[in-house]
Image 1: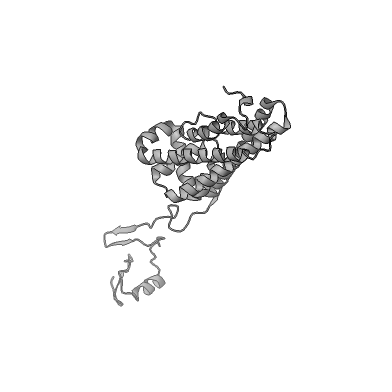
Image 2 (image 1 turned 45 degrees about the vertical axis):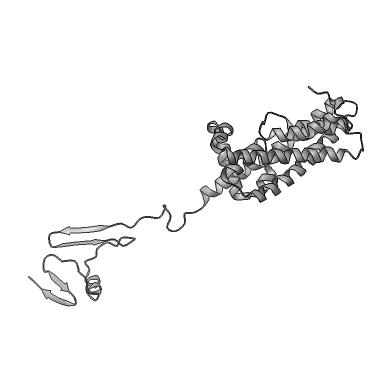
Amino acid sequence: MIDLAQLDISSPVSYLIAVLVPALDALIPVLPSETAVIALGVATAGSTDPRIAVLVGLAALGAFLGDNAAYLVGRRFGPVVSRWVFAGERGERRRDWAQRSLARYGTRIIVACRFIPGGRTAVTVTCGLIGYPRRSFVLGTALAGILWASYAFLLGRIGGQAFEGRPWAGLLVGLGLTVAVSGVIEAARQIRRQHRRRQAHAAPARPGSAADPAPQTRCSTSPRQTRCSTSPPPTPCSTSPAHVLQANSTGVAFPVMEGRTSVFTGGNAVRRG
């Protein structure tokens, strides 16, 4: 393990860590890229050397290169990478979330996933799998890299200045702030998801949806008449004289009345019995 004392602004190791760890973290998520950049911030907390900007720029470049490498891997080796990155039920849920988020938010989720635990690899690889527009992806990852590197380095400097002379305490403070921010983001995401679910359950059914009753068919199978109706909603047959006279004006078939039977056909009445 590298001692924080070795991460001096003049040490070549600092510059290698700044670019390599964020780059490899996209494909090997076990590498603690945020921890490395926070450690650099802690180690340089008391310095005003302008080379600090170079460290931040290298960290942003490493994050950018790693994201675009994940995109290319997902694009070129989709099936193999999908089985590796999205293995199991949990992996499938991550991929579904990434696809829904990209469809809903576009480039914004590419930037935001830098600050969501486990979101970076899921979104960048999924962009390659689905063929997300390359130009939009490059712009999104460039902005995400700059914001993330500045944010992580700033947290490290805050911790280092708060515990000057005790760099490990400063590192723990920086990591604690990172966990707190990530927790707030994740909690807000969960609350928003539950709110959308409640709205979906409470939304009334639209016309023509599955909740609407389907047209029903009623048939009469008496010995003297067979007639079917498919009107929605069904209207029961009526044998009142007013109804018969009204229906007679349309020239359609009419019900047959038992007893003294009157048969109406096309406006003429024939009395029987």
